[in-house]
Image (tube, rainbow, N blue to C red; front, side, top):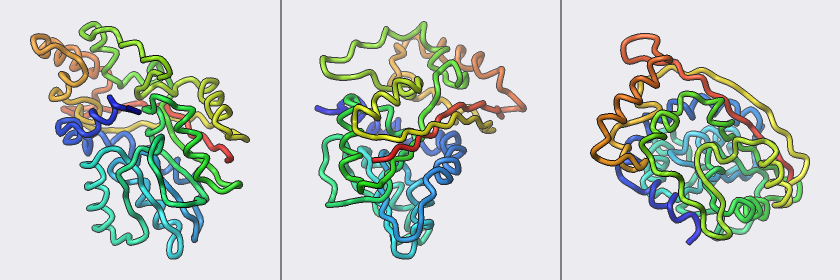
Length: 268
């Protein structure tokens, strides 16, 4: 099954329940993706891994009144959140579909623009997924997406602190690639994937931002088990995370997180 582990993770009730608090980080990146996308009125857009719908809803305003945005995600619960948010925003030109773009069938295109905000790093067959995205674009269509730079450039991530408590990552099965938030952290690797999938004229911009938020913006103790921490070591995990985040503290329960990410723009 394509993207089997990610499908389980993004449909797990505990993982989904914590997502709105973690959006604090991704919301800081949305304006950069919107600027790079430069969506215009009348365009048809699809958002890969749309999650709670923030990017799709913003772009729906940009392509109104005659354009349309279709958000795609593998998480049923996050799609429900996206639909509620679209209704609250009064955006009738955006809709959300439960679909894995790597294997699913999207209505006939072509689309003018594809976007993704931290959704591309989780495909276990990235070339196949990127080729599927390209196949739904018009000949002059574009794919604009954001992904994290390396974990070394994103010290807020608590995986570094928890690493001593976790088992080594499993080797992917034959034909599969490693996935995770930093799987696209190497620019040369990303360019190779895009070119192998048929994209051209790839532009990349390295960007940084600082976000202020609570500890729950980057972690939640309820997720330790899902991350692989043994139950008997969860207290140790909490202590490690607290020490790890101390460097970012700016006040009681408040932290400033430095983010490093890339925005890519590729032609179909």
